[in-house]
Length: 146
Image (cartoon, rainbow, N blue to C red; front, side, top):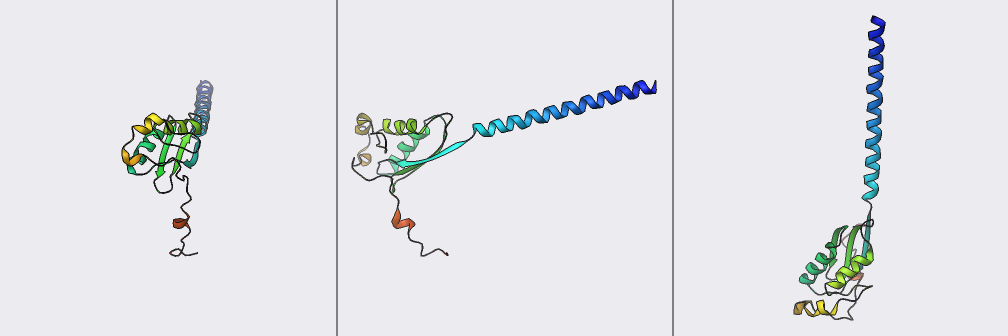
């Protein structure tokens, strides 16, 4: 009788142990797959505009693209930094969304009708430089220790 109870207990312990290992394997696989899906692409390109209202409109247009995680348009440099999930969108979709709001990008000319609807302060010069390096600001290292 003791041998039967001992055998049943040993089989039960082995069964629970193997179930725990299978659960761990599934969790590890799921975590790996999620991290692959979360791969982000960072992109910078030029966008013409003039002011804070332009910044708001440009960033709103870019954020409206599915997969875009973060956007920052620099008024002085006429440059946008975008972080997006490249499994959901691509760079050209972001360029087109910004252009549809009336702003020129490096690759796509802004929609003329949308440009005409922009407030007066946002009507930029179509020949203005964009994606400027901001060298006057970044080259001044006098306050830094090297």
